[in-house]
Image 1 (cartoon, rainbow, N blue to C red):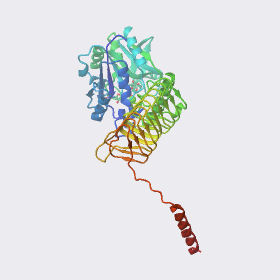
Image 2: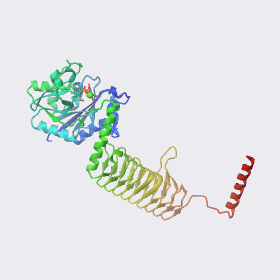
Image 3: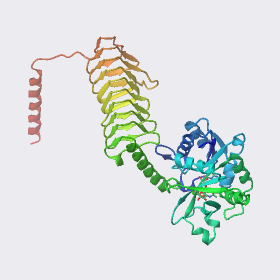
Image 4: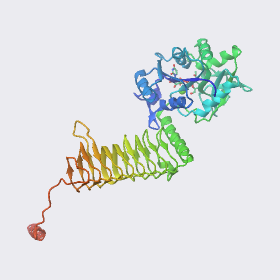
Length: 454
Ligand code: UD1
Ligand code: CA
């Protein structure tokens, strides 16, 4: 692909059929607003500019778009007068841009970078306007691509099509690629004399042909062209997304013991030779490096797992969890905003939050970092090779030095210096013969109660 590119993403529609207060393009798909999938396609083809055309609840759409890409621009379409009118809202933002413009859709998430590149290549061969189509029988209410040989002569909207055009099964995905100047020139000439009274973007094809320009089509799979209009379609799209992501992950050298039970987010990154056991869920922003092992029933979100580390079964990694090389986070351990250095271990039943755990430190079962006092969060620092006794409560802010230990069941409120043992619990006292006396007393009571009840 030689040309410079910009992307316009249409996202102004109400999405009435979602029956929701949330704008359609912000409904989650792969744990991210649906809109992010098209924005990511724009990133993958290295678009220099991304313009999101928002309308319904434009503020919310703007905020979400900027979280994904703070260089994205938002154009507001106040009234939804049609797809051609929607693209026209990006005219000003692209005034100074020279290159190709792709029109994508906030509710058409699966279009791949490869397909967009194929469209750009078609442009390189001399097509002024390139439309992305797909085969579908029956073609429902999609616009029909009217071809003459390999030239696209017209797009017929279903409502306005002739019987002959309705027989065509080559459908319009809506995705367009054209040079910026050509595109906005053609849009100027669109009218709204049609069944919907809308400014159809699709009319640019017939107009281009009248002007002696060449239009062509590139074909993609039905899945890539899939648009989401209802929650049923969203659920189907989620299932499709998961299937595609599992296939992609396996293909890249990852073992999934039961692929259909592992759920990924749109941005999950898994290295080679990672093994993921059954029933693992990835929220957004997780990276797992090569050779790590994620055991069954673990939930990871906003976490980084380094080479050869082991997580789970039943572990929960929350945002800011940094698990170092060869570190070990075992069953029922929750980690939030905490770094485990190389070889550090928390094998059972712990909460480690707002903490740093030094190299080769060992955290005993039941250890809790008491990070929150009801108002502020505080930090716990655990040194290298430190040994935290089982059921220690580390009341932050607190520091456990290198090679230090804490006694089991301690409530540690003061720093423990390097190599020291910190003990913070009541001293044990043994009372000789007391157990036997107590047991006899209890048995006598039981006997008495039995007699009283007859
Ligand atoms: C459009 C195409 C049709 C194609 C189909 C693929 C036109 C005229 N028709 O039809 O050929 O087969 O997509 O799904 O383009 N939007 C705006 N502002 C508007 C109108 C629409 O932002 O003023 C957005 C919508 O939010 C939606 C997308 O553009 O995401 C498509 O609009 P929609 O009205 O659903 O077009 P279709 O009738 O599906
Ligand atoms: Ca539609």
